[in-house]
Length: 164
Image (cartoon, rainbow, N blue to C red; front, top):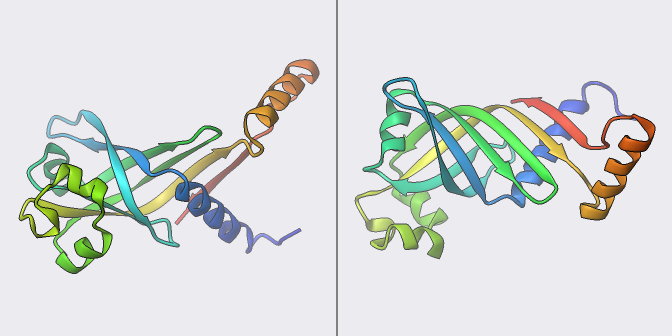
């Protein structure tokens, strides 16, 4: 069993590990009226610190929202796991990083390639994350659900909170 000082590191690793298999996020920004606005975004990179990079078009509402109000929420989902993150986003003009992260998926949205003046990066510095993971897939999830119904115990899932 690890001591308390090891726990955050293990949870950070678990969070990054889960994100590795979740390429699409719902990014929530706040508009000028204070309303929440969510849209799907393909993440390009997850850093070991759980910071995230996205490629997007400069002339979009979410870029305007981020410039004015940088706090964002990100949710990710897979078959048996879910991640919720919050952090500060910034619009980054870095052609070298843009070229490094560029892929054919980005090209579908920005056909001019990384040289397109409308192409820009969003970097999210994550300050808090939560995850829910049901290891073992669908069968394990069904067994945990049945066990919870029969015994009155709670559903078996690996959960964690991480402040970064």
